[in-house]
Amino acid sequence: MKLFKLFTLGVFLALILATAHAQSNAVRIHAPFPFVVAGKEFPAGYYIIEQSGEAGVLLIHGEGHAVAVLTSSSESSTLVQHEPGVRFTSTGGERYLRQVQLLGGPARVVLANPAK
Image (cartoon, rainbow, N blue to C red; front, top):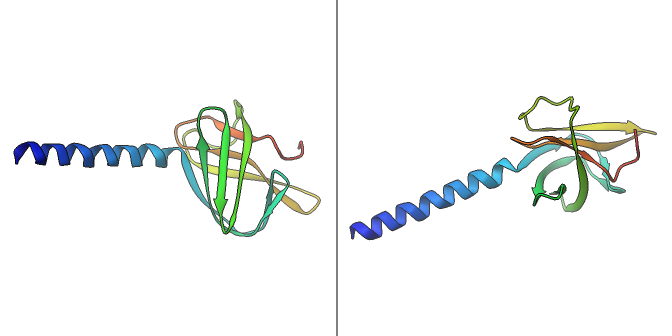
């Protein structure tokens, strides 16, 4: 019985740690306006942006839309280091997702948008 309790506690602890690690590589945002990512228009709403592996790919999904985009590391981030968030730019009346800061990593610049 004691071994079963110890095993159950170990599994529970592993699940908590895995969940905490997964959440550190994602950020949830609310965009109060429509925006464009990789040539696709996303309506205003709630979205989750998460890193997929180590290759600089971000997955953006929510409100019935999803896209995977390539990013590069930004050494000159205007977002506070280790503070999750996003940055948009505007061109010709359209807003574009430009930069994503995930917890504990460098800011990621979205490459699929027009150059600013």
